[in-house]
View 1: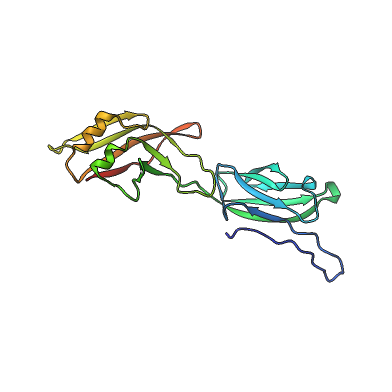
View 2: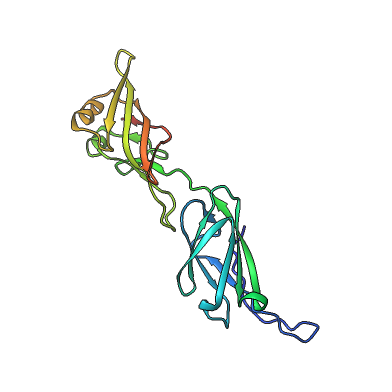
Length: 216
């Protein structure tokens, strides 16, 4: 759904009466909103003070930040958030329009080993690996602040020269020095699986998707 920015103007009706100004409603950094986090939006009605404006939302909650700045928290179970703008109260309450915003789920962030995105660049040289000890998540979304999971534990798994799987369980997100040495000594072309990744996210611990890298 396109970003809903409705330019306000006065329309002369066939009855010779001017219509009410239309609210300008816009998500500040996207043309949709993300579920479960606060999305910055702007709401204004030309000619009407912000303290005279009231907002009603279906599919989420909204709170005023400052003047025309608001924060919209969409309901994760809803498919869209509908914002209605009013001025006045009771029998004098006037509608200034509404806007529908599509709600998207936050995509899972990419897993990085050092500066290498394991989704797009899974090949790591032994020299690189010696300098890469941190396994972290980074969001591909850069135009809005997205909470990122913090890894609390994971397992590295690979086949040794006898084709037996070796599993190394690690607490936290830092690979210990002895494990770095062990991985660096693997045969070139060995795939190392990153399994059982647990991360703290929104005050909860959850299992993340597995990934892998190839030692060369």
